[in-house]
Image 1 (cartoon, rainbow, N blue to C red):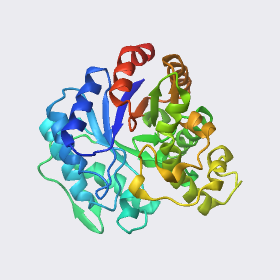
Image 2: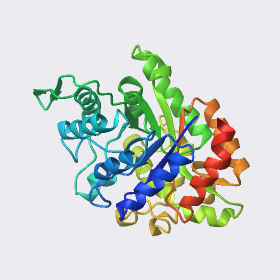
Image 3: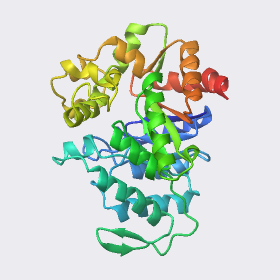
Image 4: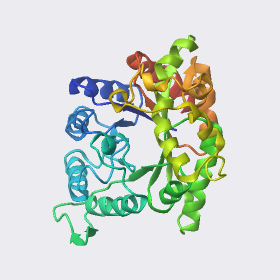
Length: 332
């Protein structure tokens, strides 16, 4: 199992670079960041510094979207980083939650997302692609490689990930839901004539190593609110108890009243009071090292290739170091 670190690009950017370097020293292989231009600093600028100051880390957004940048700009940016640092990027992509909504736009349609996945990958790897009816190619790209991993929860999005993406990003670490969604992605890949094993599976969630579960929960409760934004969209689209989305994912948002993106991904987010302890425990990895190792072994048995640690809490350095010293070796 590979391990990744997920950060917000809060200033100073040098702190993000430092934490990514620390992660690489501790055996992490991926460095991810949020991508929401209004809320945080521009990640691609920071990726250049991270790549310069690491030697093995693969970097990318968790996640970008097809709407805030034109596809040729996104592809060219990835291709430039790859030319400079040797194909060490990955494009995590989704419909766009905070990035689009904070800018006053609706998230992209799945149809648009599917077109973007193909176009961005093709352009970044030097092939011709159609962008809004215009045939384009980046003539300077040589031997470029850009895996595109898609974030998804709902049935149509899971199918699209299986059909088109190189990897699937699931932002929660509940084994039951992971099994349900991985099966959906794998089946969609098989139905599309692909080898299901070719679709990498990444589970991303907060990890907090501590015997003080009450404190750990309060540090990570924001995550249930962030996931709740996507769940609310699913309930609006498919209804409650539809059978198309597991009740184990949707039931907890009944008391959700609204969401202010100015607190997005932040400890102490006041809009996450509706998230019960049970959801925090299911969606996140909390407790002593043994609890983390046990859950990660469960996820690995379900086909998860990477666990990406959301480190938006008061113990970022500690969780990176503890994972490097005790957790990653146990899963090696």
